[in-house]
Length: 89
Image 1 (cartoon, rainbow, N blue to C red):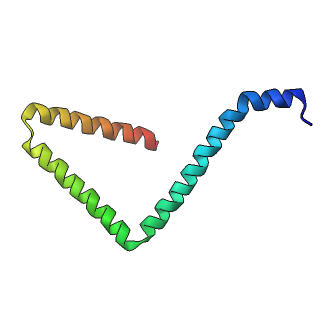
Image 2: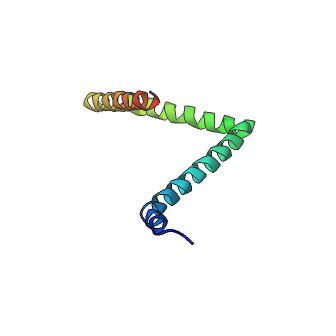
Image 3: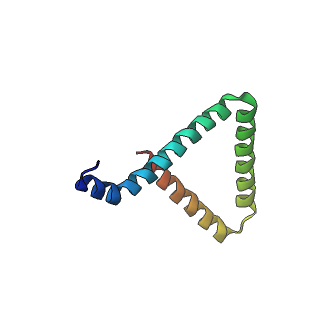
């Protein structure tokens, strides 16, 4: 039998902890799946090839873009790198 304050605590904070538990279990299982995928040499090489192809496509877009669009692209990339650096700290 639960005490009244335990029922209140579970009612108020139980859903929050259930949602956090859900996300942490999914995060952990997805990290394990990604680790298993990347341990496979063929999958890792395909992902690396896709990343290189995407980089080449973006360089091609940058070269063909007009000058004012290049400035916008450059600013967007610099902002993205700035956000990435703040996330890593």
